[in-house]
Image 1 (spheres, protein in one colour):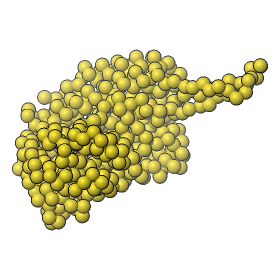
Image 2 (cartoon, protein in one colour):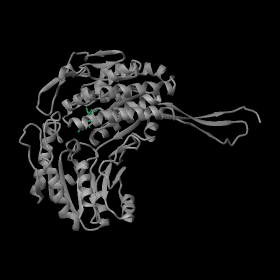
Image 3 (cartoon, helix red, strand yellow):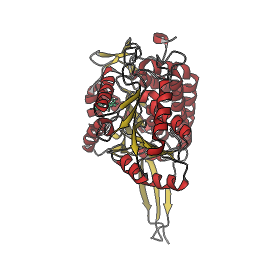
Image 4 (cartoon, helix red, strand yellow):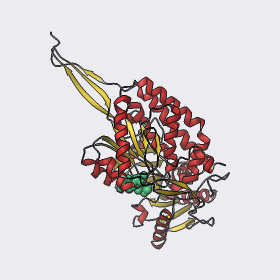
Amino acid sequence: MLTRTNRFLKEANLIGADWVGADSGATFDVFNPANGQRLGHVPNAGAVETRRAIEVAHECFQEWRRTTAAHRAGLMRKLHDVIMDNRQVLAELLTLEQGKPLAESLGEVGNSAAYILWYAEEARRVYGDTMPSPWADRKMMVVKEPVGVIAAITPWNFPSSMLARKIGPALATGCTAVVKPAEATPYSGLAWGLLAQEAGIPDGVINIVTGDPAPIGKELTGNPLVRKITFTGSTRTGKILLKQAAGTVKKVSMELGGNAPFIVFDDADVEAAVSGAMLAKFRNSGQTCVCTNRFYAQSKIYDKFVERLAEEAAKLTVGNGLDDGTVQGPVINEMQLGKIEELVADAEKKGGKILTGGKRHTLGGTFYEPTVIANAKPRMRFSKEEIFGPVAPVYRFKDEADAIAMANDTDYGLACYFYTQNLGRAYRVMDGLKYGLVGVNEGMITAVEAPFGGFKESGLGKEGGHQGIDEYLDSKYVCIGGLGQ
Ligand code: ADP
């Protein structure tokens, strides 16, 4: 077992070629959520270190932007291979600081590598345009160029792959980056520095700072050398960053909160719906922005669906993510656990019926029992608030229009899911749902090939797919005149 012998456990920030501490020498501790043990510490950097990282990234951009797409794609394929060669230790590091079961961490690290490979392929397909000119002596074209230095801020729930989605298109287009991982899970972020160095990516292309989010975020959003900010995290923080980025009119991509509905119609295959529901709810202990927050089951199928969902939820083995057989780890911290407890207490008070779970797990710490709550009602707090934990409330609905209206009754619009065996209904419901990602008879739908991004307060812009690269490019129209007739 690893801990401090893992060479990816870096306790310094990467600025240019140098692994450095905060100027003040200050650090903050990182803990294992499965047992509360301190894993180590990382630099508590602030605005000054961030500014330095931005300046290095800006200087480095002047050369990096001139490299060919084929050259960058070659380096990215190496980066993919370095990730895959170290997949096991990277996954162990991820589980240690984040808590998710090792199998999920292996999946996430594999996904990080897949994003890098996808963008290595996309790098060579950044096409421009030519247009028929309205003038006989002039030619017109549109060329694409990298936006410049990009800043990335990422959350703790996918500490490796959320960076892959941002570093991938940055490298592909010839941008340079300053990234800030989340305080709870900085090691999987800092590991990207070592991975980039081992793949031969030039110093200064990827810079990583850890520390106090507010001053770092202010510098990243306020510094005019940064031309784009890409953020994954809460809607609350996203709004702060959007306001701050307005001062220098940066490009922005925001992957924010969700409140995913999961609708089960009477004509659904109930077993398929339960399998999909388990994936869409309990993966990563319910701590993903595409996790189901609200289940809606139609009147006739309701009892069967909740009964089977509760049976399956009760079977989940909860434990330390590094132990064999664990399928649900702890939640990230005491604050998150407290919020889950509040939401469950609120539901119970308002008539919710707990079919399984409903309390802290006997393992102690931040473990929580997989929970299913029947008789959920719109007045319960989780109808509007993100649970971010292993709690599945199930609401009852009458008809299709009712289901669509309830599902859309939220400020969010990231992912949604529904189960039906009626083709006409599948099209109508897909059309009616105001969400950026729709799973029809599927509970897990994200893939590197597909664009990921929300509607409404769930965000702006797309990550992944061929669409994801556009966010890192400026389009330049060029008119060449004086060509004669
Ligand atoms: P969560 O509730 O998932 O922790 P946050 O939005 O608070 O969501 O955190 C996501 C990321 O945003 C983390 O890296 C965190 O450090 C960062 N962050 C939080 N507040 C700010 C801020 N004011 N400015 C910049 N980054 C921030």
